[in-house]
Image (cartoon, rainbow, N blue to C red):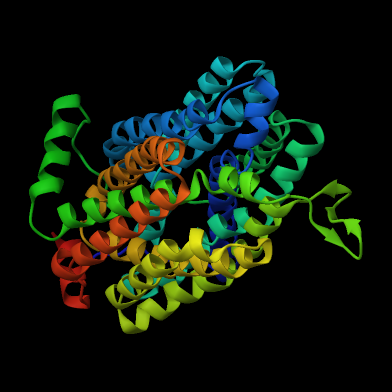
Length: 424
């Protein structure tokens, strides 16, 4: 078995994981922040509720296309170069959001950000797959991907507060600064893992052939790709219009001892604090779920998450009749979602050898982003035509479909199977 060693010292390991974590944190934050500030964007730019979903859909579709292009390239040139190129591109794209003075211009900036995100797509998890043995991959993936819930804890509430105080452009400019720090760290502390790279020169036809083989080939890669699509389809249906529904249902101002709640002197409201408490739970659950999956297996946690999430999602619009009820429900949603994320990603890294890992993870993430885009577009139709209860019902149905797919067709890799994949 040929497996890339861990970075050469505990300090180097910590620095590498932190650099990857900061990249994931910033990339996730700048993606997720669009959802809680959609009402602010619509108000400032004079855009109706329906078209606002395009900001999520277009970003997702562009990211998917860029990810499909970059996957085979990353297998040939190495993950470190991709991390550098993607983080640098995203710095520029996010900074340009400060120039968005109309909805069309903002949509164009989201296209650029989607391209930068697509370059990075899958690179952090692929790097973990290259650099860490499978028996520690859940632990490493859990810590790196905890950057996503930290975005909910820190990035989203602060970004929402910046948008409320200074306009919707400010969060993106701020995230450009944070991504610049991640870029410097990757450039200076993250090594290229010593793994066998692909010796095939990427071509359009060759990439299409490779992706086709991954979709229909043995080993569960097709089922894993479909699982990722369904996971993000359900998330897009549920989350994109949740802030709009809450805005219409409740007064958003949150007070403490009769005074408006603030962070760093910036105002917080229901949506910001909701993402905050949900993110705290995700930060706690995500790394522990990854570590626990190293012991009990990946599939049990994924299935438990899906079943619980379907119940909570379906109940949400009927149970949240008062503002305070939104907090425990959203905490449950984020905790259950985090329960499956790190185990699923660790499982995916074991289904193909290292020289195909970038292409495969880029494929799954691209398909997932397409799912988000479809979910956002369909969610807009359901929300405006029927109401938010239709969104949550559709999301719950998709989650149950995902559980069935995982149960029937997604394999649970064993140590022997992983050895065979690596040697293959």
